[in-house]
Length: 251
Image: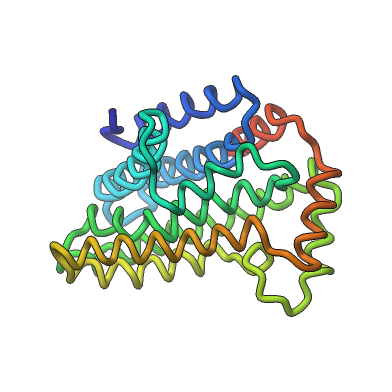
């Protein structure tokens, strides 16, 4: 059952996190981060941060429901989008770092889901009017993600190795930028706002395919980055509950 407003988005996230924690699944990491960001957006709505609070509630709800739809597909034995299959498939993959689990979820949700949520909240010619509030969420996310990286370091003592090994590499796990991804998602939303019918279907397949490719690079970067990530994963905490609860707490 989809969420009807942002409060229900938080409620459904709480339930999903509980499910993941029951089975000690690292998929709880992304869900916990998503919950924290959603609560901060809700707080912004309550404080009048956005130009149109009710629209932002609808936007956040449409966005959350795309994640829940992917989860429902898995629960029903159906295949979710390719980008979500990559993210969910990492649950049982050994030597996957906390940061990788988080970025896999972020990638699927932003690079694939977000353009459609934006168009759902502000269809057609009304989309440009969403930009200021969309950009305000970018600032919330950037601030949150900076805090998350510091928090992950408490559980992943060698995470800083990525900065040294990364150098000038173009590997996605080093250079992934949530704000840049959201900027690209906005560009895609402006294209979607002008499309209809078969064009929407083609755009959906294209966005999903591209997000899945980014996901593949996040999980299997290879070379020095791949070796560094294996070392990082081997030395970080495997206490899924502790990590997830820390991500929840800073909301």
